Length: 358
Image (cartoon, rainbow, N blue to C red):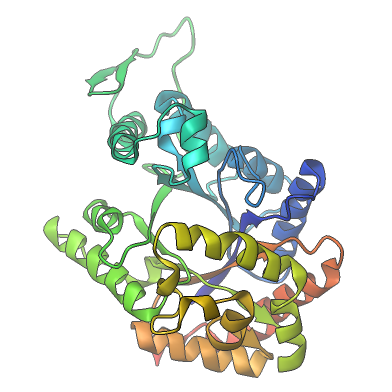
């Protein structure tokens, strides 16, 4: 089992844009220094709480100050991009990172992002995303020249011309970077499609029944196309806070940057979508707060405590490949978050690395 960090980014809205972006790069540098394996970056346009509109630029910046850690986009929102241009930007990123790129794709779930791009209908965004993904995969895999026309896009890829010396773009990885797709609902259709295509499945920090449903949907999709689903591909995004003692870890997990993000934003978003109970089924919704989750749901504690909690979650779900913990806006107390990453990478990770081999 491996670990990663996710620059969602969970940002306090009053944090300056420049300081927040520098923080994301710094967190990535720490993650590599302490032995974590992946760093993920999200894409949103209208959310002060999740303030990164160009994850490719963060990947490019992080690639220049790291050498080993995998750099992952979770996810480019396909309805808001020209897929021909995006396919080429990602090939360039894969070259710049020396093949460390993971490409994540989604349809975009936030209504204000959709309003900005004039695409308020979610079903329409899903159709656009499917057609855009077909374009990207064709550019990455089909012999050139070729033509592709679907309901939303048209590609007329020219042949190589010796005068122009191109087109000649390819990714560093063969045949292309790994592709990741996230799901939310228990029987996620997105994860079923990911299974059909052999993509990386991503799940967020929900109750075990939801997560088992995610794996079941992914495995069913894989079976439809004769693929063998691999537990080591499954990325689980889960809150992890490690301290030198249980008390120190709980203080970090309930500090203002975490508490405010959840109580003022994340839980309110899930409430809007009718999914608040997915964090803690059976618990009255007015009791589901950041403090409750830190004490009862998240992986919080000393290295010994967190190792025990990870082992229980691993066994409960039947295994997964990478645990990815979000980064929070600890610019006013950076050493507290840095220390949590250090303890995670240097003391927790080695003790659970071989869970699947038991």
